[in-house]
Length: 227
Ligand SMILES: CC(=O)N[C@H](C=O)[C@@H](O)[C@H](O)[C@H](O)COP(=O)(O)O
Image 1 (cartoon, rainbow, N blue to C red):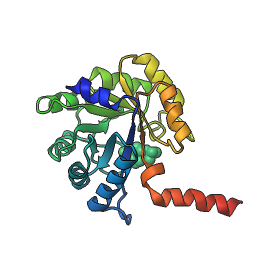
Image 2: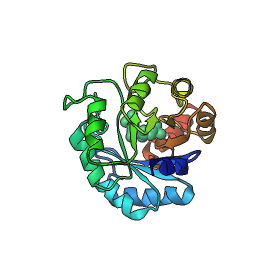
Image 3: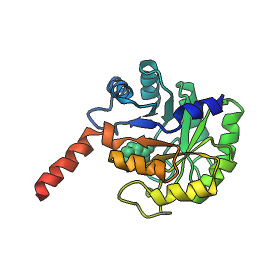
């Protein structure tokens, strides 16, 4: 079952549809419309934040929804505790995404304990948002189904690369030949998505460059100001 779900994602584009606290598009209906637009454009899965967005997007698209809950923006903040995991599952996500780093989690559980507790209740795919090779290896050993580079450059462990961390993708592929690896983070141009696959990723997740107009507008405004 999980194998079939992964095969359907191999070589595809995942689109992350998220608006941040206080932003004008922070509305589940808006996020669902963006998700449908991304689906029409070719997204094979949608990544969504928060119980309400997960529910709204699940009802609107016919592709898997990767669900997470962000709590805060420092330390462990992507689906940081078991309770957050259970809320994502309860909201109907097809794939559970959670922090996959080796850092201490707010509820005191390790990643392995969290995954084991989820597994007592739910058999679906789990995506670990990792920052290093060590984190990816640990997450894979803990039973996570998908290893993402989501947090590379967002912890103290690695420099933040300007584009995707292609070196980490290659290192993860070498360390985990059989893992399903998703390249995520700072993929801003189509050729970077292709490069991430060439570096060893099985699928590519893009957020900002497709679904965050404030940032995209800023890129253009800055280029004009500097011209
Ligand atoms: C670090 C963190 O909080 N990443 C979040 C994870 O869900 C999102 O804010 C990103 O938009 C997502 O990972 C996609 O990445 P990018 O927007 O760079 O294409």
